[in-house]
Image (cartoon, rainbow, N blue to C red):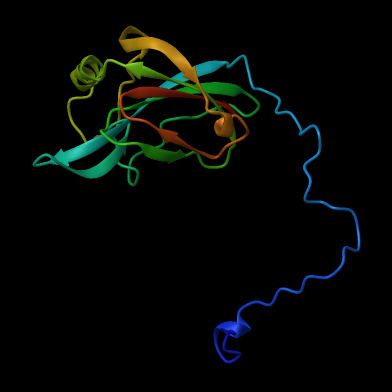
Length: 173
């Protein structure tokens, strides 16, 4: 049945005509390579937490602090590369967006979530908070790191964080 010219027929019209130039639909034999970041000058450990009320998550927290109203905690130096190790202490996969920079996802690694959470809570007993004490992730790692998936190996501004894992990103400021 033909599209009604008074409604959906007005949305878009495609006209297929003979080619007038080179075929740009074919990928080149070699795609550009991504220069990998390395040699971070600083490593920061951060956490993604959930505020729970009655066993139900009601807010996402970064380092046990709310996204709004908490003070700035990280002051990277212009021109440096840092590695951020972000521990997902929630039960869900979450997207993470870092403002004003692009970065490269390095890898993910399982952690002993219960032990890490106890250590984090020991030094950060109140959530939500207005400050936090970072907890190194090394003593709680399990197994070997898993490299970034093929579709995650370029420059990014958002990545997924899986529960029970530390996700490592390299950021050039």
